[in-house]
Length: 412
Image (cartoon, rainbow, N blue to C red; front, side, top):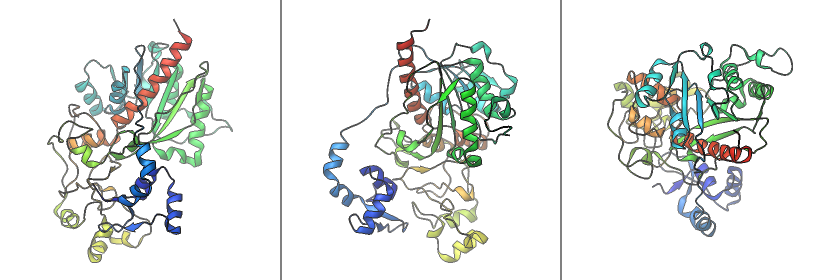
């Protein structure tokens, strides 16, 4: 394990904001140092642990769990299901998937291959009616893309969103009438069209009879996922239900790349061998020079300029370029293509992208979940997925809510 903590890691460990740590650094209370390999400003782990030993020894004993057992059979209809990251996570939480809709044929083949009993509705969501599930499923979920709306008036209605995939999500929720619906999206939805897109979505769910819980962005690293991925969660509760939904509680322990690829707490064996993309020799020659946790700025200046070209003089960190992940850190967010220059995710020791199975591990898919299609198609499916362990923790929060709902209402 590293003897250093990043600003973010130190902040999480002691429960203080980054701003507080920066102030303490200025005041000399807890000083940051330059990490020798990467030259980032970091904290000596031993110093942090010594200063906060009393506090940490009490805190680490409090191990939370979001686990809750379903008291009934809860049924899920999933839209925009992809390769099944969220669906597998919900399944692990004890929820039953009754049908999934997905337009990508390779993702559909993946779903069918792994779960022959699941009803996979392949094709454009606009072509499907879901009225047969009316009052027969407990939750509708969906990871719809971020699309702008045309505002006819000040308040956005369902009709104004026609043509967008969120319109289809809302249409299905209206048809099916579940107690709870959950949409998931990228963090960028918060600022998309200066917040108007999200405001419009909340307005539409209100119109079709759902109150939206204050939106949260969940960080996958807080939910047993060894990856710095964030997902925005949009939760709608049917207006006749007067119960509070609670998001899953974040765990204190952060898992890293070693936990993903080696035998340990997350997986019972080392990652299986599999196919993977390859770098051209010109890129290998450059990346061979990058240390673990390093990136293009760790290259000799002459090579930096050659490799970056015109980008060398542009502002911005560009920290994803020529980035080699370290064993003792969570992986950066995976993309749909493992060898893109702007979002490099190089293996810690070997100069190559992560393989398909390594990608799947970082997204916490089980090793027996097989992906269909070409290697490029498999990377795309995995890169687009909701991390399975994050899906499971969200699943527990849904189970907790539905247990309360059925205990209170006892519907026939």
